[in-house]
Length: 405
Image 1 (cartoon, one colour):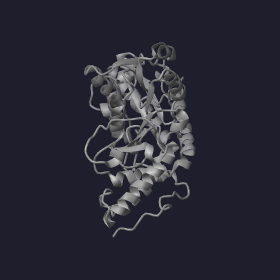
Image 2 (cartoon, rainbow, N blue to C red):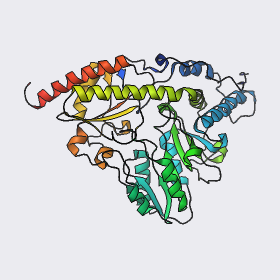
Image 3 (cartoon, rainbow, N blue to C red):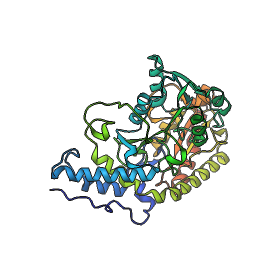
Image 4 (cartoon, rainbow, N blue to C red):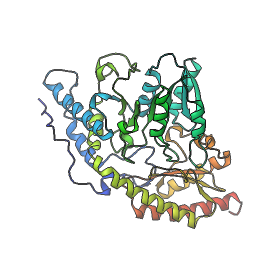
C-alpha cells in the first residue's frame, strides 16, 4: 500500500537558488518561452511520486495515493491562480486547454468571436476551423509594431453579437502584455464571455483569475519548470463548457481519460513556489533590460519589437538588420547558446513569423528576428557571454552577406 499524502507534504521550504532552475545541457539556455527546464526539486519529487502508480479513479488502497496527489495538486494550482479547486480542469497542455475553451463554450445564439491578430497557433487555427465550419465569424483585433492592441477597433466591434473574446495574457514572441482586465470588463458589459490564453504568464508574473474577471483561462505546466504533458483550464463557476474529450467521468465529466498523475503532481509542486514568483520575475526583468541595453549599445542596426508596450520581463524580440534569423540561430547554437527565431510550435516553417508580420514588420524584418527568453536560472554571466558572442556572430554573418568573406 502506498503512503497517503499529508496535507502539508507539498509545502515549499526556503527559497531555492537560481541553480535549481538551470538547464542541465551544455548550452546556455535562452529559450524559456518555448519550454523551461524541470526544477531540480521537481525532478527529485518525481522519483518519489512514481510510487503513486495506481489509478486515481480506483477506490482501493492503490488508488488512494494518486488520488491524494491529484487532490492536493489541484488545490495548489488553484491557489496559484486565485481560483477554487473545482474551477480547474487538468488537460494535456495549453493547446488542449485552448481548444477545450474555444470549442466547448456556449453563449446563446451569438455567432461572433473577437481575438487578436497575434494569438498562439492553438487559438488562431482553432478559431479558423470553427469559422470554416460555419460555427462562428472571427474578427481579429490589430496590434501595432510597438506592441499595443487597437482598443478603438476592439470597442467598435464589441456588441451584442459577440459570443466570446479570446486574448492572450502575454505574447509568446514579443512578451507584450495586453490589458486583459479592461477588455474583460468591456466584454461583460455587452454580455460576451472572455477566454484568456495565460500560458506565458506562469513564473513571469502573478496572475489572479478573479481579479482579471476572465471566464476561462489556459495554463501549461512545462512553461513553469514542471513536466510536459499537463495543463489546466480555469472555468469560472457558473460557466458551462462542453467537453472536448468524451469518455469517463474524470475532471467532473469535463475531460475524460485517466489523469496524468505524475505530471499533475509536478505542476502542484511548482505551484507551491508562488511566493517566489515576484522576486524571480523582477530579477529576470532586470537581466533582460541589462541585456537589451548592452545589445543596443554594442551592435548597430538592432531594434526591439514591442518595446514601448508593457512586456513580461523574460522576453525580448530583436530585429537585426542584414542578418538572417535562422542563420544567426544556427551559428549561436554552434557557439553554445539556445535561442529561437519565433514560436517553438512553428519550428521548421520557412515562412517568417505571422505574429511579427501581423504587427506590421516587413518580411525582411521578420526574417531577421531573434527571440530571447530568460528564466529563473539565467545569470548575468550567461548574459555577458551571450552578448559578446552575439556581437561576434552578427559581425561575421553580415560580412558574409556583403561578400567580404
